[in-house]
Image (cartoon, rainbow, N blue to C red; front, side, top):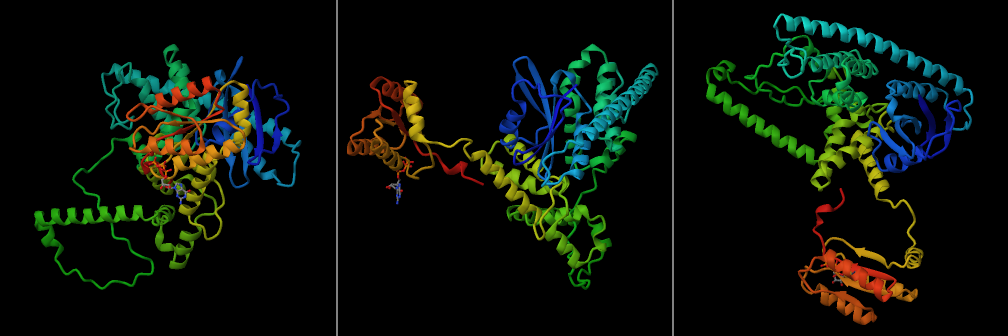
Length: 523
Ligand SMILES: Nc1nc2c(ncn2[C@@H]2O[C@H](COP(=O)(O)OP(=O)(O)OP(=O)(O)O)[C@@H](O)[C@H]2O)c(=O)[nH]1
């Protein structure tokens, strides 16, 4: 059973909760979701697990970015409620229609929600039944094929190598059910497809169900999109084996500008000659390709100016229909409401950029997913490029992550540490030569002025002169210094310095460290 459904604004104003579900949630799952997931730019995740004493919840959410609304559903993790995504989508749709920023109470939404929940449950039940039937049919086909000793070819996207032996047959069914559901555009069918598959499969598959569940299908959906072959490819694969002409080279066509004057024919070479000379053709193709590659590299470095154009091309099935002015206008203004596909090129460029700045791929991926989630469905401002919108959203996300979640009052924290009998430790880190040691001395002086006893720890055991430099500051300020010379493990020196400070009653330990190269500079 659903435990809670909550609608609130990005500013934190709760607009509606389901009173019937009650407020008996254990712990504070919503707060934790906001703090640990949404504010940490992990809103691109599919769900969030929250464990409280005596309860394990799964939370799912969706946004209306245009109105700045967040919809969160909470349910017991053990239940695997497959209708939740569907319910959230319908609640979002219905609530967005009645939402008024000046209105605070939405009591009349109770009835609407009740109805939506019933409908979502009924839909899920129906899909479950139909998937069961479908699964039964598929299973029978497989058994028949097996009896006849034939391989079931063309069911999977791996080129149809799957054979209908006992261990493989389920995989083949699963894929075909899932792909069919995806192709039908049925957002919930896939969940039921998996569920039916798992239940019909007996005990051993239950684990796989919980692992795969709705999430695997979403991953699959993502994969299908990112493969470029997209849904049409899947259809081909499902129905018949794909025909790939390996000899045919894919060459990029020259871009034709809408307003470009018609070129007179300049190439007078006889195409039949080219066809006759194999060598010439190969050289020409390779040369052309390398030039294209160069162009791609340059354009990708160039702040992805072309990204929007590519998007525009994707969204315009027939570019001839739009004139120069309308195509330029669309490239500037973009679409009214952003869709995931519009954001993908710009996000990919940003992800690559983050990775070149030494951000781990997984983190870059998660950040991009989160930015996509925060922009999807949002109305673009006039004369705004998609790439700049994405860049701004990414900047905001990074600032949100890097902004401390609480105000830092060093003196208050120093006294708090003192009450606990521990020294307060400040570690100075940064790239080479930014002024770590100098500022350490300044902070030491400031603390002295506030009657705080300070000790310095010389943990730059790498740069020659660093220990002497700190010693000079310490002598001038008349502050004790803990030093162990050079080529020592700085972490060990710092640990010993803190132990020493605890022994001699110093309130604060200021740790100087060696500079690090600029590899972690900002994007
Ligand atoms: N103008 C100016 N110079 C500064 C400031 N802080 C530090 N410096 C100078 O910058 C140079 C490097 O300062 P340090 O404090 O040694 O920098 P560091 O980060 O400890 O250097 P490494 O340990 O080598 O990474 C020195 O010549 C300082 O005098 C400042 O606030 N203003």
